[in-house]
Length: 211
Image (cartoon, rainbow, N blue to C red; front, side, top):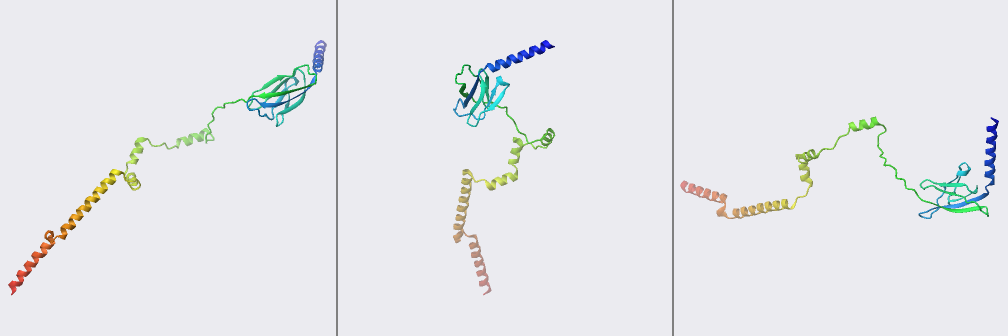
Protein backbone atom coordinates (compact mmCIF):
# COMPACT_ATOMS: atom_id res chain seq x y z
CA UNK A 1 0.00 0.00 0.00
CA UNK A 2 2.81 2.38 0.85
CA UNK A 3 4.51 1.55 -2.44
CA UNK A 4 1.37 2.44 -4.47
CA UNK A 5 0.87 5.65 -2.50
CA UNK A 6 4.47 6.63 -3.08
CA UNK A 7 4.19 5.95 -6.81
CA UNK A 8 1.08 8.13 -7.10
CA UNK A 9 2.85 10.98 -5.30
CA UNK A 10 5.85 10.67 -7.61
CA UNK A 11 3.66 10.76 -10.72
CA UNK A 12 1.77 13.77 -9.41
CA UNK A 13 4.97 15.63 -8.63
CA UNK A 14 6.42 14.71 -12.01
CA UNK A 15 3.33 15.92 -13.88
CA UNK A 16 3.22 19.10 -11.83
CA UNK A 17 6.91 19.73 -12.50
CA UNK A 18 6.47 19.15 -16.23
CA UNK A 19 3.52 21.52 -16.27
CA UNK A 20 5.57 24.14 -14.48
CA UNK A 21 8.38 23.69 -16.96
CA UNK A 22 6.14 24.86 -19.89
CA UNK A 23 6.51 28.61 -20.28
CA UNK A 24 3.43 30.77 -19.97
CA UNK A 25 2.27 32.84 -22.93
CA UNK A 26 -0.43 35.41 -23.45
CA UNK A 27 -2.62 33.79 -26.10
CA UNK A 28 -4.74 36.28 -28.04
CA UNK A 29 -6.57 36.45 -31.34
CA UNK A 30 -9.54 37.41 -33.46
CA UNK A 31 -11.99 34.95 -35.01
CA UNK A 32 -13.30 35.49 -38.55
CA UNK A 33 -15.69 33.76 -40.91
CA UNK A 34 -13.51 32.27 -43.63
CA UNK A 35 -16.15 32.85 -46.33
CA UNK A 36 -17.18 36.43 -45.60
CA UNK A 37 -14.29 37.82 -43.49
CA UNK A 38 -16.84 38.91 -40.89
CA UNK A 39 -15.99 38.45 -37.22
CA UNK A 40 -17.66 35.55 -35.43
CA UNK A 41 -18.80 36.75 -31.99
CA UNK A 42 -19.01 34.83 -28.71
CA UNK A 43 -17.01 31.79 -29.84
CA UNK A 44 -16.19 29.31 -27.08
CA UNK A 45 -12.42 28.84 -26.70
CA UNK A 46 -11.48 25.64 -24.83
CA UNK A 47 -8.01 24.73 -23.53
CA UNK A 48 -7.94 20.95 -23.75
CA UNK A 49 -4.61 20.81 -21.96
CA UNK A 50 -5.99 22.59 -18.87
CA UNK A 51 -8.92 20.33 -18.03
CA UNK A 52 -11.08 21.88 -20.75
CA UNK A 53 -10.91 25.34 -19.29
CA UNK A 54 -13.17 27.59 -21.34
CA UNK A 55 -13.28 31.28 -22.15
CA UNK A 56 -15.53 33.16 -24.55
CA UNK A 57 -14.64 35.63 -27.27
CA UNK A 58 -16.40 38.99 -27.11
CA UNK A 59 -18.91 40.38 -29.62
CA UNK A 60 -16.03 41.53 -31.84
CA UNK A 61 -14.56 38.02 -32.01
CA UNK A 62 -11.58 38.94 -29.79
CA UNK A 63 -10.16 36.73 -27.01
CA UNK A 64 -7.11 36.76 -24.76
CA UNK A 65 -6.01 34.53 -21.87
CA UNK A 66 -2.90 32.96 -20.34
CA UNK A 67 -1.88 29.49 -21.50
CA UNK A 68 1.20 27.31 -21.73
CA UNK A 69 3.27 26.54 -24.76
CA UNK A 70 2.13 23.28 -26.32
CA UNK A 71 -1.48 23.61 -25.10
CA UNK A 72 -4.22 22.44 -27.47
CA UNK A 73 -6.90 25.09 -28.04
CA UNK A 74 -10.29 24.29 -29.59
CA UNK A 75 -12.69 26.89 -31.05
CA UNK A 76 -16.39 26.02 -31.27
CA UNK A 77 -19.55 27.93 -32.11
CA UNK A 78 -23.06 27.02 -33.17
CA UNK A 79 -23.28 26.85 -36.95
CA UNK A 80 -19.51 26.57 -37.49
CA UNK A 81 -17.03 23.75 -37.78
CA UNK A 82 -14.68 23.24 -34.87
CA UNK A 83 -11.14 24.47 -35.29
CA UNK A 84 -8.11 23.50 -33.19
CA UNK A 85 -4.50 24.60 -32.89
CA UNK A 86 -1.48 23.99 -30.68
CA UNK A 87 0.44 26.88 -29.19
CA UNK A 88 3.97 26.48 -30.55
CA UNK A 89 6.95 26.48 -28.16
CA UNK A 90 9.86 28.88 -28.16
CA UNK A 91 8.01 32.16 -27.87
CA UNK A 92 10.60 34.74 -26.87
CA UNK A 93 8.07 37.56 -26.37
CA UNK A 94 5.88 35.32 -24.19
CA UNK A 95 2.84 36.09 -26.34
CA UNK A 96 1.14 34.41 -29.23
CA UNK A 97 -1.42 36.16 -31.43
CA UNK A 98 -3.43 34.38 -34.11
CA UNK A 99 -6.21 35.02 -36.60
CA UNK A 100 -8.64 32.11 -36.45
CA UNK A 101 -10.84 31.49 -39.48
CA UNK A 102 -13.90 29.32 -38.98
CA UNK A 103 -16.08 27.87 -41.73
CA UNK A 104 -19.85 27.95 -41.49
CA UNK A 105 -21.43 24.51 -41.31
CA UNK A 106 -24.78 23.95 -42.98
CA UNK A 107 -26.91 21.39 -41.19
CA UNK A 108 -29.92 20.05 -43.08
CA UNK A 109 -32.57 19.27 -40.51
CA UNK A 110 -35.23 16.68 -41.28
CA UNK A 111 -38.61 17.98 -42.36
CA UNK A 112 -41.07 18.41 -39.53
CA UNK A 113 -44.82 18.39 -40.13
CA UNK A 114 -46.83 20.30 -37.55
CA UNK A 115 -50.28 18.82 -37.01
CA UNK A 116 -53.18 20.60 -35.28
CA UNK A 117 -54.03 17.60 -33.10
CA UNK A 118 -52.80 17.28 -29.54
CA UNK A 119 -53.11 13.49 -29.35
CA UNK A 120 -53.75 10.38 -31.44
CA UNK A 121 -57.28 10.08 -30.06
CA UNK A 122 -58.10 13.62 -31.16
CA UNK A 123 -56.70 12.90 -34.61
CA UNK A 124 -58.79 9.71 -34.88
CA UNK A 125 -61.93 11.58 -33.87
CA UNK A 126 -61.33 14.32 -36.43
CA UNK A 127 -60.47 11.81 -39.13
CA UNK A 128 -63.64 9.79 -38.58
CA UNK A 129 -65.77 12.93 -38.88
CA UNK A 130 -64.17 14.11 -42.12
CA UNK A 131 -66.41 14.74 -45.13
CA UNK A 132 -64.64 13.65 -48.26
CA UNK A 133 -64.97 15.66 -51.44
CA UNK A 134 -67.25 14.47 -54.23
CA UNK A 135 -65.78 12.55 -57.13
CA UNK A 136 -66.05 13.69 -60.75
CA UNK A 137 -69.35 11.88 -61.32
CA UNK A 138 -71.04 13.49 -58.34
CA UNK A 139 -69.75 16.90 -59.36
CA UNK A 140 -71.11 16.39 -62.90
CA UNK A 141 -74.52 15.37 -61.54
CA UNK A 142 -74.72 18.49 -59.40
CA UNK A 143 -73.73 20.70 -62.32
CA UNK A 144 -76.65 19.50 -64.53
CA UNK A 145 -79.43 19.78 -61.97
CA UNK A 146 -82.29 22.16 -62.75
CA UNK A 147 -81.33 24.59 -60.00
CA UNK A 148 -77.69 24.71 -61.18
CA UNK A 149 -78.70 25.25 -64.80
CA UNK A 150 -81.14 28.02 -63.86
CA UNK A 151 -78.51 29.74 -61.75
CA UNK A 152 -75.97 29.54 -64.56
CA UNK A 153 -78.52 30.80 -67.09
CA UNK A 154 -79.09 33.91 -64.99
CA UNK A 155 -75.42 34.70 -64.50
CA UNK A 156 -73.64 33.45 -67.62
CA UNK A 157 -73.52 35.82 -70.63
CA UNK A 158 -74.82 34.61 -73.99
CA UNK A 159 -72.34 33.35 -76.55
CA UNK A 160 -72.15 34.36 -80.21
CA UNK A 161 -74.26 31.51 -81.57
CA UNK A 162 -77.03 32.14 -79.06
CA UNK A 163 -77.03 35.87 -79.80
CA UNK A 164 -77.29 35.14 -83.56
CA UNK A 165 -80.29 32.91 -82.97
CA UNK A 166 -82.00 35.53 -80.81
CA UNK A 167 -81.36 38.25 -83.41
CA UNK A 168 -82.72 36.04 -86.20
CA UNK A 169 -85.85 35.32 -84.19
CA UNK A 170 -86.37 39.00 -83.39
CA UNK A 171 -85.92 39.96 -87.05
CA UNK A 172 -88.40 37.30 -88.13
CA UNK A 173 -90.99 38.54 -85.63
CA UNK A 174 -90.45 42.14 -86.74
CA UNK A 175 -90.91 41.27 -90.44
CA UNK A 176 -94.03 39.24 -89.68
CA UNK A 177 -95.58 42.10 -87.72
CA UNK A 178 -94.72 44.53 -90.50
CA UNK A 179 -96.40 42.30 -93.10
CA UNK A 180 -99.48 41.97 -90.92
CA UNK A 181 -99.71 45.74 -90.50
CA UNK A 182 -99.46 46.26 -94.24
CA UNK A 183 -102.12 43.64 -94.84
CA UNK A 184 -104.45 45.24 -92.29
CA UNK A 185 -103.96 48.71 -93.84
CA UNK A 186 -105.43 47.57 -97.26
CA UNK A 187 -109.29 47.46 -96.98
CA UNK A 188 -109.57 44.83 -99.70
CA UNK A 189 -107.40 42.52 -97.64
CA UNK A 190 -109.16 43.29 -94.34
CA UNK A 191 -111.74 40.61 -93.47
CA UNK A 192 -113.38 42.94 -90.95
CA UNK A 193 -113.88 45.57 -93.65
CA UNK A 194 -115.54 42.99 -95.93
CA UNK A 195 -117.79 41.90 -93.09
CA UNK A 196 -118.89 45.49 -92.40
CA UNK A 197 -119.52 46.09 -96.17
CA UNK A 198 -121.71 43.00 -96.48
CA UNK A 199 -123.60 43.97 -93.35
CA UNK A 200 -124.31 47.42 -94.81
CA UNK A 201 -125.70 45.86 -98.03
CA UNK A 202 -128.02 43.61 -96.03
CA UNK A 203 -129.22 46.48 -93.92
CA UNK A 204 -129.83 48.56 -97.09
CA UNK A 205 -132.02 45.83 -98.68
CA UNK A 206 -134.11 45.56 -95.53
CA UNK A 207 -134.72 49.33 -95.61
CA UNK A 208 -136.03 49.25 -99.20
CA UNK A 209 -138.46 46.41 -98.41
CA UNK A 210 -140.02 48.34 -95.61
CA UNK A 211 -140.77 51.29 -97.94
